[in-house]
Length: 300
Image 1 (spheres, rainbow, N blue to C red):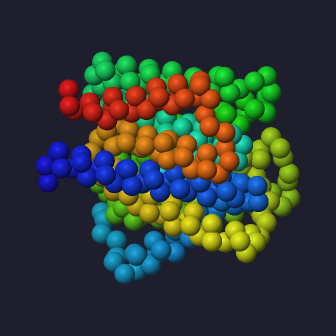
Image 2: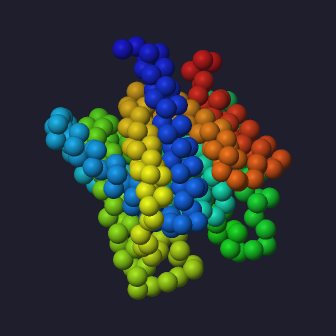
């Protein structure tokens, strides 16, 4: 398959993944008043891991392995990114949380330059600067004098850095492991870490660390279908995301994830979130412009 065909397929896969992840976020937004973010991480992965184990039993893994620590790292950092993502949705809304998350290609492009040796042209450095400016337009006006508000936004923004690190690890693992093994490592970590967090939450209550410690509460009947939809959408998104990063340079495919922002604004507004204000819209446009510039860097 040619490089152009690979790029087109990778872009399509990332577009599908973006919609699925936005829908996952919408389910989390719907459940935020009833279920704490750590539980959502647990349920998201419990549903997905059943299907993944079934897939592996039907078709055994084909891989050479050899990078166990990187595989474990991908699982842990991805789970921590989920912690901050669902926490952000519960505190600052769906659109802003996903916009923070989708700023990860800015960090990813820089990391790819330093650690993978990917060449960045002047226009790509300009794109990175625009991306950071977009983050500032959203972050700075949203943080008032309240330390609590600052905490919510910092945790939400930290998701971008951790997501970028997780996606960068996928690039390093794709040559050694079956895609399903990479996804499974993430899901298993996304079960083990929340169980630890929720167990600690039964003995310790801390407002300062409520993003990593919580108490388990059983869902009610009307919440189960939404939880199931969240898990299935996340699974489909994860599959297409992993496939997307197997085709092309991380910077090109990652930028397509910006479509997630548009989906999140639509879902968030439908679910009762305020439409982004002027500063936030400017920030969103700058971040999207950054993504377009990085996406089409090969066209120049």
